[in-house]
Image (tube, rainbow, N blue to C red):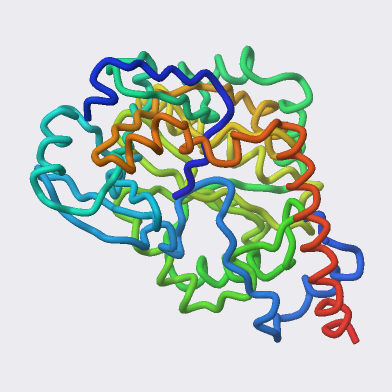
Length: 354
């Protein structure tokens, strides 16, 4: 899973604190019609949204304390967090903090957050707000009439008119084959190397079968062809989109809009108050989220120092990472990375087309 802290209000209270080519590039279009033949294009980059199905985000030390599975990551400063923090809460942070200190593990900082819909700050620890994208769900009619605009409603209607049918799907061999076809359509999506590109049937089946016990799958079909799909994760208090993607070749049919509409409908049927689409972002993905009714929801994330290194880390607010830089600098760096990725992939794509 991916947690990128957005710029926002940081409130560091001293009490208790210091005592402790999709742009598919044009010349890569032919790649969509051929099976990948080079591992140079198979890149597993961190996804902007949804769980990390390749399990890369779970690398680190795993321990169990106070009945909670913790993941400890980092080199210079070791940060502990719940292994599955999207699915469980820290109900008694003081007890957990004491237990971590008594355990003798090498964690310097404990980080935990409040899950939606629990948005009001509860604790006095140093806090920064994670900004997620969420639809407050009342019912499907309210979403249709009040939370999306006429353009988005027309996109959902267009999907239906162009023959897109969204239905519940089983995770069987035919469905996995459809996933592989979608993943291997293009090596670039949203200006970045696509992290599922180049994966074969067995890899996709293995990575996406691990969380089926808490997921519901819907496919978007044109005839018998799978042109898009969505994994809805039921996380108790809310639902989250684990994966939503469609074929670029069928983008004119707006399958993603139809899939979002189905997700809202299912949340309303189950009485789930929030549908979460990971972090709040800008750019084309952010525009897509806003147009489909997602709103910015700020959730408190706490940082508790456990050692002297942790106290320095927290007091200097180093947990903010890239957000320590001005927005303009971050935007400049992201654009630079996107251009480098484009240039790096062009020779490979040219070779494949030749």
